[in-house]
Amino acid sequence: VILLWKADWQEPPPSSVPFELSDYPDFMGCPAWDESNGALEKHASVFVADPMHHILVAMGFVCKFGAESFRGKTVLEIGYGHAVVLGTLLRGLGAKSYSSEYSPTPWVSPFHVPFYTKLHQHIRTLAASGSLGDTSKYNIQAATEFAYGCGKNISGLTTLQSTAEDLSGVPTGTVDFTFSNAVFEHIIDLDRTFSSLSRVTRKGGMMCHQIDLRYHGNGWKTPWDHLLYTDEEYGPEMWVHRGNRFRLQEFLDAAHKYGWEIDLVNLQHSSNLFPLPEKEVRQYAQ
Picture (cartoon, rainbow, N blue to C red):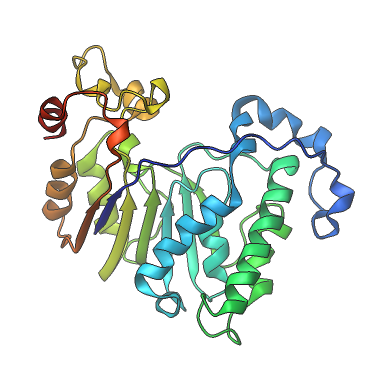
């Protein structure tokens, strides 16, 4: 288990570039703006998603183990967000992927078409540089098929609507690697989550989770505020949207309970995020 806390990324501003589906011939089978616009009412935040940020996060996970380690393996990504980046990247290596999301974003062409176009460009550059293993073995066509199919499930890449606690749809004992980015701070039940992870993972499987332990309200300016509320004031709905109140040791204890061996814990702190005196910060961080 690798647990990381990264707390220094800022979302980029929305793009103002006009969208015309005809500018993207590989996506001509996808719905145009007028057919996908309704999906934006609940998912308008898609337009701040940055392909470069997501590819760097995915590559950080791949580099931890080495690209060739994923060839022919089965990978689970928990909480893929607005777009399936890791599954797209690994499909070119011949890996099978399950990508789960609690609240999946429906296909929105004005977002997804430019996003995946940029993502494919990044992948081509990485593959050509050897960052994705043997350049002669990386299959660019396989990596692009999911997006060119407008985000519909294809052989070897399955999207699932499921919580981390359930992982419904993921077969028992099939997963070699599991990855999540900024997901575990939103779960409600640690026991069920790690029990489900143990259920779906093969013996000897590995997982890597980046967890942001801060309070997600107030623009992250008061990172420990969620620890000051009573249980009645800060209920499950707040945990899902503003961050749960589990501390690092609770994650580690739950992992141990269900048979996981802790390999690396990497804490990343940013001093400018702590408005409280250091003594109080240390107290709240326990």
